[in-house]
Structures are given as C-alpha cells and as structure tokens.
Length: 451
Image (tube, rainbow, N blue to C red; front, side, top):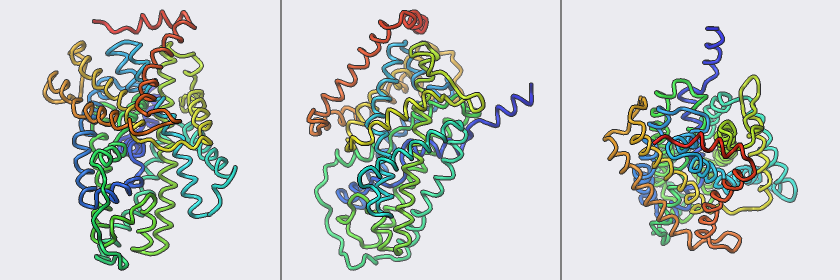
C-alpha cells in the first residue's frame, strides 16, 4: 500500500512544472506586445508592463494562493464558487470560462500556422492551414491523455525553448547599442492609455486556470502560492527585459507591428535569430494550447462528478486519470472553430473571463465569512476587510474593459451586448439542464452552501 501511495505521489505536478504550465496559460511569451511598443513607445510600454501586474495580477495571485491552498481540487475555481455560493453560481463560473475559451482557444493553432507559413510560405493556403491546425489539436489531445504531469513537465521544457531566443536577442541588443540600422527614433504614434492597458491586461490574465488541476499537484498548500508569485515575476521579467534592451538599439517604435519580434531579431543579430524567434512562436502557441486544454478539460470533469453534467464527462483513463471524454469534447469544440477566422477581440476575452474572476473574488470573501475555521495554509493578510478590498482594482479594470468593448463588434453585433448575452445565457443553460434531468435538481439541492 505504501509503495502504491508513493508511486501515486510521484505522478503529481511539482513546483516548476506548475510555474511553466501557468506561464503558458497566462502569457505564451512576449509575442503580442508589439502594438504596445509601437503605440506607447519603449518607456511607456515598460511602465504599463510594470503597473499592470501590481493592480491586476497580484490581487488575483493572492486570491488563488489562498483558495488553492484551502480547497485544492480538480475544477479549481468552479469548486470554490460552488462551495461558497451554490451550484447555480458554480455553473455560471464554469460557463463563463468555457464560453471565453471558444473565442480564445481556436486562435492558438491558427497562430501556429501563421508562424509555420513564415518559415514555409504558402503552407497556410487552402486546406493546408486547417490541416496543420487540426494536427496541433490532435498532438495536444494525445499529450493531455498522458496526464497532467506529462503536460507540466513538457511545459517546463518548452518554456526554455521559447525563452531562449529572447535571451539571445537581449544579449545582442545590449551588445549592439544604438545599431538601429540607420532608423532614427521618432515619437510614438498616438495610442490610448486604455487600449494599451487592455493589451497588457490580456497578456497578464489567466492565472486562475492553474487552479483547475489542484487535485494533481503535489503539496498544493505550499506549491500554489509560491507558483503564482514566481509566475508573475517570470512573466513580467520576460516582457520587460527584452523590450528594455531593444530600446537601446535605436530601432524606432514605429517598426513594431505584429510579428516584429522576428524582424527586429534579424536586424540585430541576423537571419538565424529571426528563424529562432519564429520557431519560438510555434512552441509558444503549441504549449499555450496544451496547457489550457489541460485546465479547461477539468471543468466538465468536476461538474459531472457533482451531477451537473452527464456522468460520461467524468470518465478518466485508467493509468493517468486524464478526463479523456472532457479532453476530446473540448478539442472538438475548439477544432470546429478553426475555419471561422475569429479575430482576437481582447476586450471580449477580458469581459467574459473577468466576469468569472469577479465570482472568484466573491467566493474568497464568502468562504472567509461562512467558513472561518477552514484550514488555510496561505491567507491573504488583513482579514475579511482585506479580502473584500482585494478584488476592487481588478473589478474596476474589468468594468473599463466592458465599456471599451462598445467600440468593437463581433458578427456585426456590439461586443458589449454580445458579452452580456453570453453572460445571461448561462442562467438559461443551467435551467435547461435542470429541466432536462430531474437528478440534477436533487444534486443542485445537495450542493447548496450551508449558511
């Protein structure tokens, strides 16, 4: 029995693999920050990237640290909200997260194809791009079927592969000070502070996704709080240092359009670094999809175990305990979106995901009030008042993002109204589930929180 328990323990996700998986759930590297540099200039970009984690990521990390150490479970934030506020709100938490994933997850195979096409022009044309994107999904499905530990360990390896070219870029940028190829610096183009902040928020969001594999993490009470803080530091350093180094080269901010990391890398060090940065983008897209598939697939698993989804979603593989039905269902859903060509709507992602995060802050406060004796190896310092205030800044930023989304459209529908429709639809879906299955009504009553 002891040997069996030890073998089971060795299969858990440890600190650095969890940090690496969290990194890709949140960031995927400096790719995507080019427009911030172009609009705000080097100094403005660095300032935004310093401020954002303090008011946006740090409160989230503290919240996750306490809840993950107190209630480490598969399904993470769904379990927290359900325990604190009941099955209806737990269902809404999962609904909002999965709905946001539909507009987010299909883009990563598409990004992978875009990077491949830079190395092999024409590979994205016609059915080839769809086939490559589908291949990425199949690879990640097989990877996830090997279990959470396999995904975490591979994330750590891919983190080194992805960051390597940026380390080299930083070194060459510092060695080739003011060698901007004759391009003289110029004032940055007008760029709204809110627009830049939203891009930075998008590049710092998703820490709570790491909570969904709480049942597979070794010593979660210690590992989660440490992993969240170290992941924030690693992500911020990975953003700021390369941009800071590039500011010394004399390359003007105006050249920083989407995909410019590879271009400026080639200009500073040569074509070989351009290729390396492009390859790093492929690794980042693959690793991000892989890590998020691991996270999101635990939501249907946890909900099925609670009886709020059909029991088939609770089926796992015998050896790795991976939720294979949930993994396949998520992969098929996202794969069906490959050919739709969604443009990334940053504010839409922030609003839907942000609404779920607000529920998590509410769960933090409710559990402090309703279950004060719940063991909390890590606590947000300051008591109930601090828990109430912790979510204020992120909530304000989410409201700003929602108001900003009025200027964007999706399928000719105002993005703000579209977001509100998705939020309200969650209640309707929950009621339909209850009406279609009487067993769910009984389960919902059993899962109501005690007051």
